[in-house]
Image (cartoon, rainbow, N blue to C red; front, side):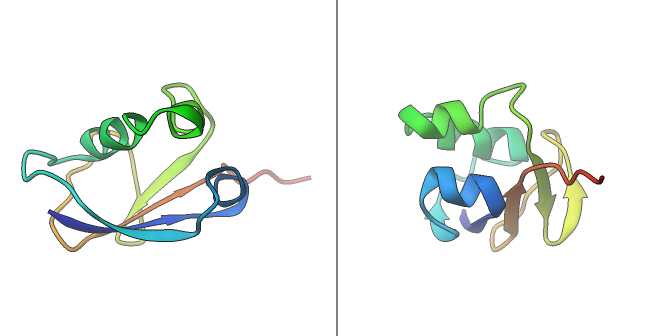
Length: 85
């Protein structure tokens, strides 16, 4: 499965990149599977994308959650929650 991953704001700064193209096994069918694969990179990846970490997810520019399905060719974006004030 080919995916375009995008990282915004604080996540972009922490992870050191704004986007990447990844190839994951066809068994990765939802956002949770993608997160698990990224966490396996270890270090800052495991920390920044840990369960309970404050970030939001969008799949093809629509808000998503860990159970949201993902198809090959999708764009998956990760970004910190927006706060007002």
